[in-house]
Length: 303
Image (cartoon, helix red, strand yellow):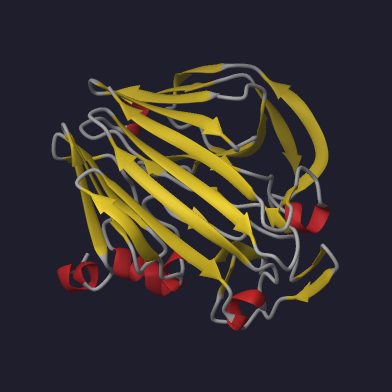
């Protein structure tokens, strides 16, 4: 990753105890680095400039205004009928031509409202015409990232504008890794969940099945699964090499995606406010009334 690109992306460095983090203010408030005792805990951060150019995810990106993919370029919600332009520079399409992860993190500049040695808070006003063409619901996001000696907490508040209610379907895509150990030595623990049945393109069909607790080495096991959480504060654990990473959904995240592709030295344990394709299907979709707020938070602990 070129240092000049990093320097031009509004980096904000946080430190607490043995943890250090970097968030990029002008690049979607991307979590670009998380280190414990100087060792990297995030995957896909080796060349952020290239990732930004390709429109791919990296580090800890916010996926907004929808997480994962939509089942096509058309959706209707809240009295708005939206036809997305597949050629739009604001969109990223997956291999099936489906709109993926809303507007990409490199294209969303945030405004700092508060900062300290271990905390950064920033605002994003969703009021630009080009953004409203993709998601025609005026609102404001406030994201606060804070470190303590053993954890990173990310809080997000979506406040609907006075024009009308706003659907909530954002999420985060943290790419996690354990330094000093190969994937075959990573131990993964997932809580009991309800797994969403997906079609070949990764779109939920509407069916669910119980997924009992997973507690074993990750090894070559491949995940690309959507889940409904069964606890209000579920915990997902990755451990190995003397470290344990615990992802806790503190509030506002009723859904999860677990992504561990074959041959990659990372796993994504993703907090989501809605399931994939919720803007189209309406399944599991929350709405915030005009002038009201939706709050969500997760904590990533390192022990």
